[in-house]
Amino acid sequence: MASLEKSGLEIVAKLMSISARTAPKSGGIDHVHIMVASSSKQKSIAGMMKKVAEQICQKLPNSKLGNAIKEDWESDASSIIESGLLVLIGVEGRKAIGLNCGGCGFSTCSEMLKHRRISLTEHSLIGPYCIFKVMDLSIASASAVKTAMEHNVDNRMMYKAGVAALKLGILNPCDLIMGIPLSATGKNIYFDRTDKLDAWKVIKSNKNNKEP
Image 1 (cartoon, rainbow, N blue to C red):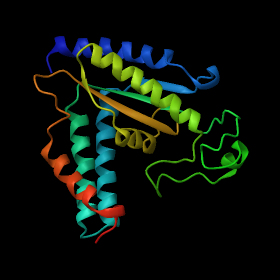
Image 2 (tube, rainbow, N blue to C red; image 1 turned 30 degrees about the vertical axis):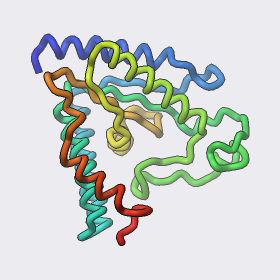
Image 3 (cartoon, rainbow, N blue to C red; image 1 turned 90 degrees about the vertical axis):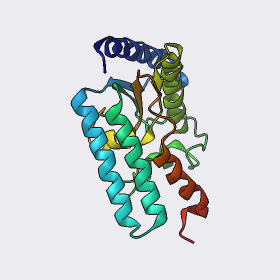
Image 4 (cartoon, rainbow, N blue to C red; image 1 turned 90 degrees about the horizontal axis):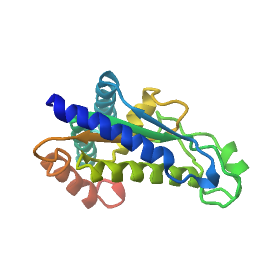
C-alpha cells in the first residue's frame, strides 16, 4: 500500500477510536477498550483465524459444512492480511449492569455471573455476557464504522478477527472483541469474494447447521 494511503488510514483509525470512545454506554459506565493492532498483531490474528479454520474442519471431517466454514474463516483471514490496518474494539462483557433484565438468558445478574464461562476451546465466544455490554460494543463498533465510511475507507466488521484476538490474549481484559479491518485500494477487498460466497451457499443450505 502506498505511503499516502497508509498515513490516511492511520488518521482515520484514530478518528474511529474517538467515535468508539464517545459512543453512548449503558448507565454511563465505560468498559469498552480500543486498539489499532500493530502489523505483527495483525498477522498473528490472521494466522490464528486460519488455525481456527483447521480446528473446525477437524471437528467435522469429510463434511461439506465443515469445509464451507473453514473456507469462510480462511477468506476472512486473507482479507485481514491484505488490509492496511486492523482496529480492535472490545468490551468487558461480564460487567453486569445490575438491572436483572433477563436479557442474558438468566433471571438475575448474579445468576449469570455464577454460570461457568464457556471456554474458548469449546466455542468461539466465552459468554454468557451482559446484554447491555453487548449493546455497548455494538454501538461503539457501529460509531467507528460510520466514521470510516464518512472518510471513504473500505471496512468490514469481523467477529472472527475478534475471536482470534481473544485466543491470543490481545486487548485484555476484554472477553468480547470485534475486529474492523481497513483498506484503501481501487477495489473494495471485502466484497465479491467468490470463495466466501460459495461457502455461505453451503452454510445457508445446511438446515440447522446439520449434515443432511
